[in-house]
Length: 231
Ligand SMILES: C[S@@+](CC[C@H](N)C(=O)[O-])C[C@H]1O[C@@H](n2cnc3c(N)ncnc32)[C@H](O)[C@@H]1O
Image 1: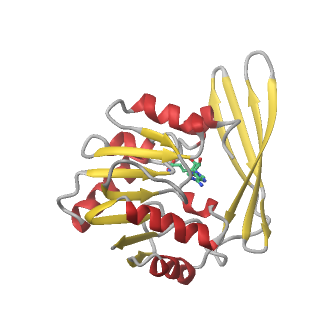
Image 2 (image 1 turned 45 degrees about the horizontal axis):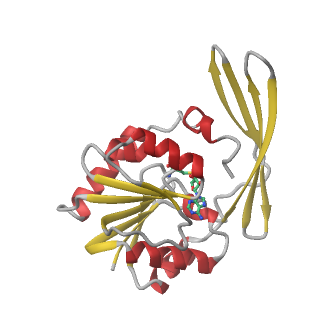
């Protein structure tokens, strides 16, 4: 997924206001679970949410991509980060909040994997803990054949990342092309991202199957919605 481009992630996603999103998450946690003190950030990426949330909470994280785990660990010395698959993990600690943000759940292409992940999230909760899941797009929201571009323009580094959006059944297909310009040369890389398009009803049924009580906020923190669940 991100193994060739992990080091560029923060530059490419600079359009996201992680500090503001972290504040929105903090406000939501204060409302849903006022005494919460600890968070597990599942599929934490480079720990940009965790970086800001660690000012208020004890936070740890997991991610599948080893380079993200290294980057995350280098940003927050008080946290522990592990390489793990979100649909099958077991950690020594329990948390007041388990969050899985920025559509990472969509990388689980099998319905059973989503249910398994939600059960893992539940198993890592302290009593009265909450789960926050920010989903990927629904099938109705996904527009096939829509080109996208993100650019980075620094004096010694230029990046242009382009893709068009594809579809194969229920799987959204993204084939990224990266042109990465450095003083010595321009490199071309490609990367495939395949994410399942689950309807809101399907997502709600996965939470039910995991024996979680859930409600859905269609706006969420980044306009992609948010599932808020409790045991
Ligand atoms: C779009 S990024 C989001 C990262 C971070 N949460 C953020 O908000 O920037 C998706 C993340 O999901 C991770 N990921 C994908 N499949 C995973 C899996 N099965 N288990 C754990 N992490 C996974 C990727 O490595 C990547 O860090």
